[in-house]
Image (cartoon, rainbow, N blue to C red; front, side, top):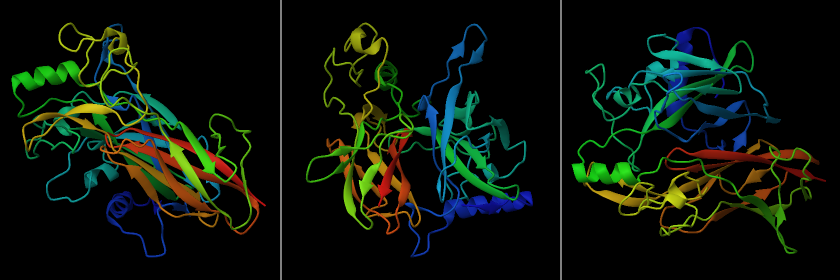
Amino acid sequence: MVMRARPLLALALAGLVVAACKPEFDDRPSEIDRARILAVQSEPAEWVRVVDPDTNEAKPAQYRALVTGPIGTIANADLEWSICSLPKPLTELNDVSFGCFQNDPKLVSALGHGPEIRAALPENACRQFGPDVPEDQSFRPADPDVTGGYYQPVRVLFRPTPEEIVPAIAKVRIRCGLPGASQEQITRYNRSYHPNSNPRIESVAALGPSGPFVMQPVESNPDAPPLALAAGQSVTLRVTWPSCPLVDACGDGVCGPTETKEKGAGQCEADCKVEKACGGAERFLAFSLETRLLDEARETLRVSWFVPRGFGAFKDDRTGRDGADPTTFVDNVYTAPGAPGLYPIWIVLRDNRGGVVWVTVRVKVS
């Protein structure tokens, strides 16, 4: 949402609007009518603090964002990246603290500028946003989400003009401990939990009577031929992601939740010495504070569809598959606009452990 940046309080108030406002009846999340940050990706998708022995500093992660506007992707956007250091008070209903939208250096610290940055997360992330006792004990430890995860807020600001601000909060998954777990459960978790990886879009295809037309992403091939449609024509688009093993088998190339590179039960050095992401709905171990059980779970995948307003429309804003559904694709119906032209479509794939990826494809209407 575009906001006025002056005074600084306006930024904070606008942040609350972003978190709490509901669209009008004629608004659709899939229609882009202003500058928006649609997604923010961290690579790796789950922050595990690893200290480089040569520098004695934590190894950084890579962050990038998908920034769009009413006529297309805003490439090389000069983004302002910051870390929020303030936990969310119990009195606030938003996902993150009100203070994350203020420019108080005691509450946020700058990470850098640019379309992409490399930066490490704070050493105290699990104290401020995880299960450890917070430094300010007027706050309580955070509760995990349904996957057993905790998240460090990263604030991203884009300024289309000197007087406008487009904000976004990325919640970066952080590896923390297991409060309430037994020593046996902690040992099993430490041996067999594998950090999340970002999902992968295997293909985007338009389904037609003569067979599928595979739409190549602009990110990998800027000169790829677009999907040709007539004005007002509707077509089913299918997004496919890789299939992940439903059971572990040593040698299948994926280090699953019953496998480990360490000696003992479940050892599979072939798959786990250098872990490779399967790119789809991964299986993982999750500890529940409510049941005190450490169980195997499978990711939910969700696809968000976007197009500039007036450049066509989707039947559904979001589609997806839950963890019990092994299907590796979702469909949506796109209807082309009435005017001829070359139009972008943005597709964002997310898993429910904080992983995200996106592609841009194009349609040509004549």
